[in-house]
Image (cartoon, rainbow, N blue to C red):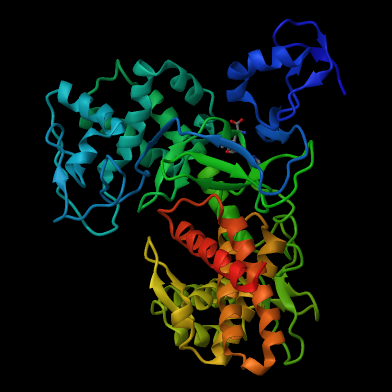
Amino acid sequence: MMDGSCAVCSVAAKSRCSNCHQTHYCSKEHQKAHWKQHKPDCHPFKVENDEKLGRFLIATRDIKPFEVILREGYVVRGPSQNTQPVCLGCLNGIDEGDHIDCERCGWPLCSPDCQHIAEHNSECSLLCSAGNKVSINYFNGSEPHPMYQCVTPIRTLLLKDVAAEKWQQLNELESHQNLRRGSAQWKNDVEGIAKSLPRIFKVGKDRYSEEEIMRITGMLQINGHEVPTSDPPHVAIYHKCSLLEHSCSPNVTKSFTKNGSVVLWSTLAIKKGAHLSICYSDALWGTAARQSHLQFTKLFKCQCDRCKDVSEFATNYSALLCTKDDNCNGAVLPVSCEHWDDKWQCCECGDIVDKRRVDIIMDRAGQDLRAMPKASIDACRKYLEHYGKLLYKNHFFLVEVKIQLVQFIGAAVTLPGGGTGSSHNSLQLIDSELLETKIRLASEVIQLVEKLAPTEARILGLMCFEIHSGLSEKARRIPLESADASVELLKLSYEYVEKTVSYLQYEPSILSEGYILKQAQENREYLKSFMGF
Ligand SMILES: C[S@@+](CC[C@H](N)C(=O)[O-])C[C@H]1O[C@@H](n2cnc3c(N)ncnc32)[C@H](O)[C@@H]1O
């Protein structure tokens, strides 16, 4: 163990804090005396820096699966840059006929209670002091309203005068000001934010220059987290969490509490010295979509292990199916991971496929997926049958439909946020073939996600819950004479409900995953007492 000096008295000290493995103490007494001061910075990671990544985090000790790595409150939060009208108190969406206008500043709110939420007070007081009221009179479903893109930037800028520590934290974050300068997005932001914000909030250039507004806009775009605890999701900035680097197969999972704090944890064991990463994009998208999203929104080209491997860890997640002859069934993928727009080739028979043909199939598959009627088992099955002849079996479009199908089969419960979930009663109504399909597809999704992005805890938890429900129903259908088979199924069902609870343990009750968690906890207790575990 490396020596250091005691954080309290500076004498040489061998012992280190067992959580962060970084701060040294000469004695238990000094460690105890220092705890209050040390606690906010006591984490099992440290910040490092290199040319390619800028700052990033590495583990300072081995981290166990499901251990919390960091809990952190937001520094600032507000509406996403492109959003329909939302309540500036709770950040939930509002409709034209179902809101009130803040009596002080005019911004729409969902109820009088939301008028007094501290975050709304910042822009509200600014408008009041200028004697100004806004008027939002354009509501069009989920269409973005242009004025909302100025709200989170003004909330951030206002911290400069009232919260020096927070302002300092925000200023440390990357804005990529020079990389962004001159791009199409930059030009839009100059018009939509840098020029509009002073007009809407009646602040002069001497207070916030165009350059400063654009820097804050960039900081929000590069570091903002989409927080799903409101509907639509809002954006929040976290200080330490912003230093996590990106990987398309990350080793850290991100959950949110209902008051908007972030919880970082992992489904995996992380070795001391490993880089900590989250996925800035959607880990269930294919490589081409993730890469262009990252390039466009975060301004870097991802070169993680998954992106460098066209087969995405031998899953062929972005591959078409070779149709050269009936027996090939090979995966058709780009010849090189550097050239997704160049020719594609079958990994089995070597047949070259024109990229235009790839684009036509992908465009149609995407359009048909978007046009699919909601919650239709038939439509999902037809899609899988049709596109199963053109796309490789693990293709992300097929996986998306499999996930939907798993959730539709036996669905009876509408969850918070509008999703569906199965319940034991509704599962009793489906035939055995559908029940087997549900369990098989959920198992396929789990196997695939465990290879591609094993920290995608929410989808793993949901699929485990569906298998648990399916197995319990299968056990119920077994005749009494075959009690042993039923017991085996219930034991397996119990294993899956335990996994559900582990994967969803940090999900808040306001999200559909939190609702499933509660259900899974109840089912687990029931099975435990029923089986005498
Ligand atoms: C949220 S910030 C992360 C903290 C940042 N490194 C810093 O020093 O402030 C995101 C930026 O970090 C860099 N970055 C993060 N992950 C990366 C990766 N896997 N490859 C290249 N750059 C990355 C990119 O510049 C990206 O826009």
